[in-house]
Figure 1 (spheres, helix red, strand yellow):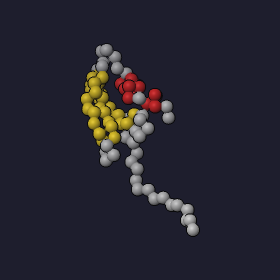
Figure 2: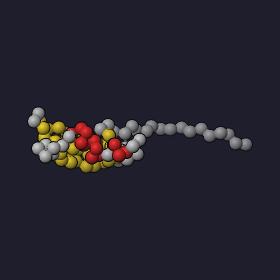
Figure 3: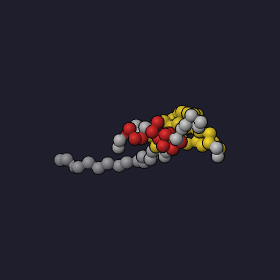
Figure 4: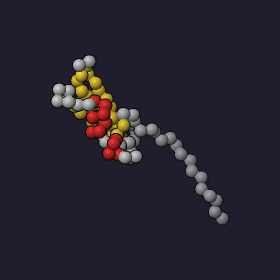
Length: 82
């Protein structure tokens, strides 16, 4: 995946299209979930009202509007050596 196209700045421009008349504000920055992944809340005041979107950072460093998938228990098998 090309993380340049999934940077937080790129996603904010894509989803909120900030302008001088409608700037965006980073409202909350923190850690989410049991694996303590980064998430941010970005807001923009629009003519139709307040628009707020959460962005989540994935393991590869990219940012998305959906949280990373949780990984469940994993069982491995190994070849038997004698």
